[in-house]
Length: 134
Image (cartoon, rainbow, N blue to C red; front, side):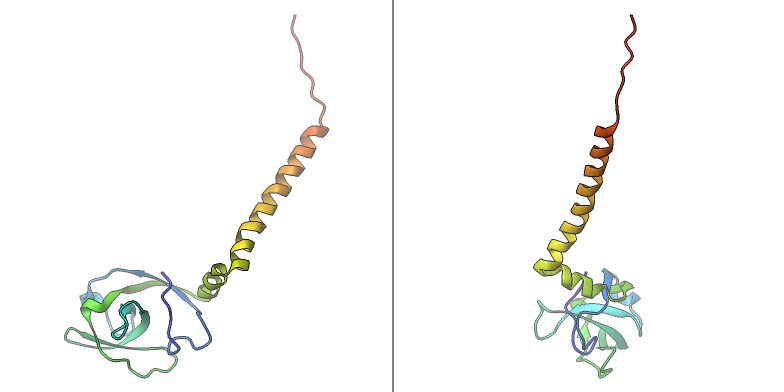
């Protein structure tokens, strides 16, 4: 999953990608990165670091600005980051563009075609003999 980040997390663009798994909110601790539905726009997913837990409310903050967000409730939490893939978000965004997608398809396809053409050329250059037994 690569949620849309906020400027507080990474001001220069998509940055890192994260793998998020559903987790029991009781297993979330200060310092964890979590993804949750934004309070103002539930369709918008935010991934920030947990800075405070108070009862059933969690306060997060982006790594860049470090200013706390409004508290969220447990039911807004999607899950906790299990793996952080540094810079992978840039690749995902690039693949969403037409040139990125075409490149991702064209480059491997070109290697396969060249490999097969070379293999066929080598096979056609070989003389094949068959022994016939009488």
